[in-house]
Image 1 (cartoon, rainbow, N blue to C red):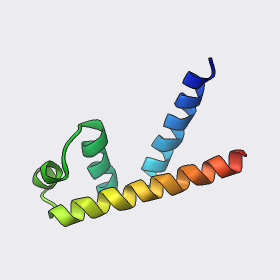
Image 2 (cartoon, rainbow, N blue to C red; image 1 turned 135 degrees about the vertical axis):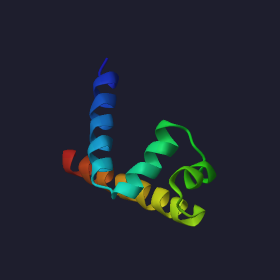
Image 3 (cartoon, rainbow, N blue to C red; image 1 turned 180 degrees about the vertical axis):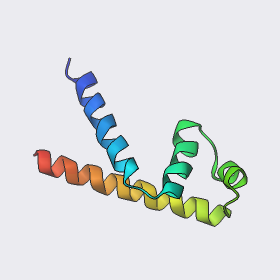
Length: 76
């Protein structure tokens, strides 16, 4: 029964981690994750070069992962 509560806590931590990203990283990840857009579509929508979109996505995800792992370590 605790799974939904854990999911809610994880989602909240992910949202907080996302807010620590640059504006461009947030925009790219929102378009990718929440709207299901491809890197090419995001480049077209934002006017960013495709390589920049890929870099923002990768660095943003790496930063979120690091923050979530740090939060998990501090909970243990």
